[in-house]
Image 1 (cartoon, rainbow, N blue to C red):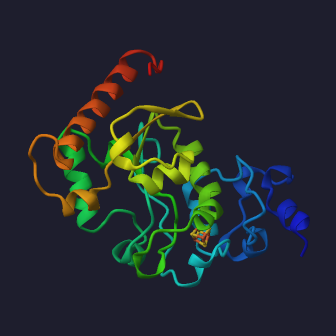
Image 2: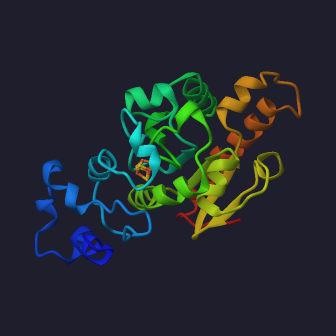
Length: 241
Ligand code: SF4
């Protein structure tokens, strides 16, 4: 099948079918853009479940070969804060959920420290399938997976995006600076407010809470996030960088 034909099949918005007639998982195979060069148009998906159906069959990159489950997200799909990590690890791959191991437990504790719960956030990753040996996903793999991430951001429509670690920053914004240089800084991406923060796995390797150490810096950052969220909620969503 040519790329053009495959893309036209995938574009549900051009079909006469109503949104309610979303194809079921059995008929979705022909609609999946298996070639990563084929874009997935914005507005393709109406729900996270539709994204999950396609990711479960996706082979836009090689990570699709060995996954147990694609990892789409967890939390509240209407949350005001979206957290983006790197890629699933073993636990995530097995359970089909992001941040479920020790890193996830620490992330939950960090959120709880400023009275944020799983209802206040939606958590996803730059890549939806687990890289072998838990290696960092390549730029090519993250580019192949990015349309799904962009659709998730569009659906959640968060006020704030937190990018955990340099890989997540690079995947979304293209900024290649080291995380120690840019963590805690507000930045704008596509009109949205983003903050790079340390990945919880990094904090597990650096447990000191002394001032200036990563855990202490994370505490400063998450407080700044909570404060900004309250400002946005109180100021009719206006963004002040
Ligand atoms: S990582 Fe993303 S692009 Fe690659 S196969 Fe999985 S869902 Fe598809």
